[in-house]
Image (cartoon, rainbow, N blue to C red):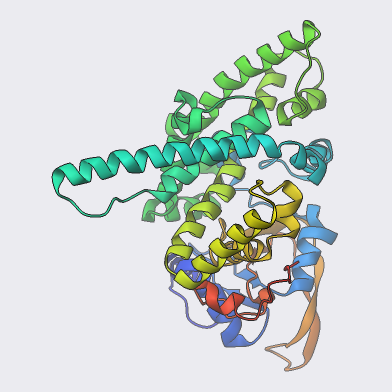
Length: 421
């Protein structure tokens, strides 16, 4: 790819442009699902891909040959510990196998009532909040009440994670642990959007030894990790006491972690469980809360879609004599709601691109041939050398204009009885 800054390469402009437009624009520009961009700080070129066959090779067929960037892992460890988010290779495989049964449709269906309870608590709390704000606004002679959708989305998501995953009440995000974990998470996310947050990983990538320097600010564990260690210790003790008394124990995420690590009281084992809990909290918090907040935002800008969704829900309520939708109803009987959620995921992914590094040489197949810039011949695969940095971004797979920030373009050809798969 031509151009690029002598120091930043193409990485700074990619970071500045919103919603990964740098990648999607250049995939369109070159008419291929693959291009090469210049790395920053004198680092080798980076391979950007969107070709589905290449993505399948990296993330499915030969997944353990492509690992998270090594310079990122030390910081991941200090932020969330050595849980499944940090792990690679056989360690990641064993953790995935052990934890996968917790996230089956059958298990999630069994937690539906708990999710509904959190949702009802959320509705009551936000209605009370709006009533209080309206009273204050009326007293002060002000206009409409503003509600922070991101704050409230995080509150209800945290509540559901605590109920379903840990059997713990985060009090709709108001529990001290919830506030500290979310506060630390927001600070880390905000830092990543600053210039120092952009530069620091580039410097570490160029000079990896910096991550190992015995400097307190570099080596210190994150606040969220420390808080979760404290909370996990209490949860594990309480759960073990219940088991010792012969009481019925919940079959949730915490139970799966205890089975995975065995009946051990060693601190290292408890720390490993804590790391998995924190990874689960932050990963689910990031995805679910973002989806909910951006759904509210997007629907507020599209009154037609908002009305259509409201009518679908009212119609369902009428046909079911006012009963709440079941887990299966959400999957099968509310197609427009399902389509809206998937469109929000397309428009506002929690991670706009994914980066991997090849451990060994490999060959990436291409579903759409590209021309070799040197020979001019069409090629159906790309040879990858060990150490190659790869960034994946896939949006046009939906078959729509991925630059559109409205529901209209994505949904206009959707019949009411069609579910996207």
